[in-house]
Length: 155
Image 1: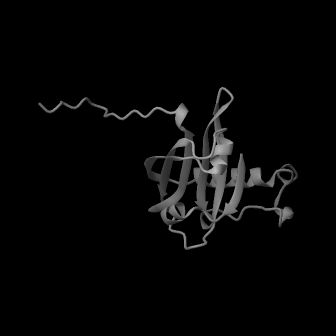
Image 2: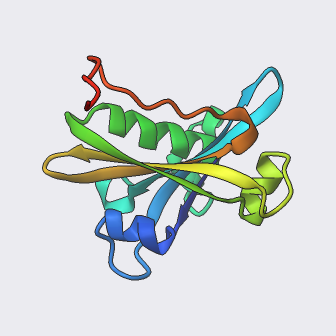
Image 3: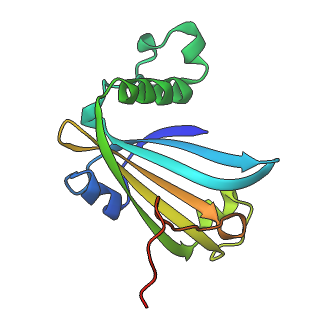
């Protein structure tokens, strides 16, 4: 849905080990089910982890197809470089929260509506290579916790 180079939220910047004011690539998308938006996702990647992305400031770096959609081209380049990494793992945090104004607009909800926020940290080369923040409409989610094997109940 979109791409920008931006200073990520403070919590994401900490996970990415960025200095204050540090910038990251932000690749955005909205997930839908049967035409209804169910999640707004942003994948943050430190700008130093990928080749410089072409921008409107340097159109010579863009081929003819990309010139009409430089943000899309940049997003594809960032994702392509991430796919080339050897992944070592991930961890995930799940929180209940309230929709920020931007997420509420994308999710067709009122600001402050209940949401589920899933933050995923992806590891490669011994460090955090990317952080994904997915905000889900609470009315479209179900949380199920379980183990692969049944555990005996305490008596």
